[in-house]
Image (cartoon, rainbow, N blue to C red; front, side):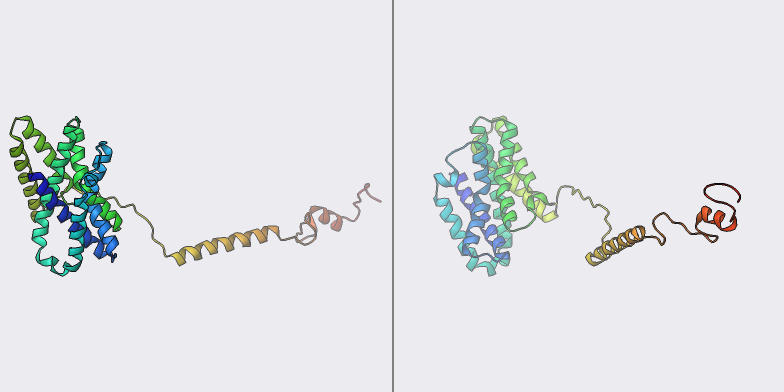
Length: 267
């Protein structure tokens, strides 16, 4: 019962974030509703498909769709109040992430999967809705940036399995996991904790397009000029070569030695 209530709170908070993201892209009401639904239940849908867990959560309980769409429409008409409730949204988002991670872990374990698949299920449930939201809104997904988001889902999954392994009651395991995971998320936001970022920049020579075109045209003109020079016919025929003294060495001999004839010696 507790998880069901927290789940409704979580999908409501995610629907609000999805609606606001759609509003930044100037979408209509249908687009806002779609982005809100993808944000709120996209992660759980991907999880159920991967784990072959049917029927899907929102198919089994369609009222969740109505809650999400209602939250999205209300957000459209009350968005001007968003800056006043930002701390509340951050808390609800942290709680929603923790709830999604716990539910993903529980479903994977109930289906007989091991710890690795349970952890993956928690991460997919917690973050894939936001990933699809950002992709639909043409942004780099938040989970791939510096903030601790997917890591919180992983921490929640590991903590849940560890507490369950030591024999704590189910309700205590859920409450402790939710409290610690949500608290770590809020502390990470407050102190700007994040994972190391890999940055690689290849050195490139940037040249304006018009300069690249002019250089290409210059190369083409140079090639044409060399081609015309090579193919230009020489005066006197293709095999004639002129020198200062005459038409080659043969011309020099015949000009300065009139006694020389092709057929013999002196006359």
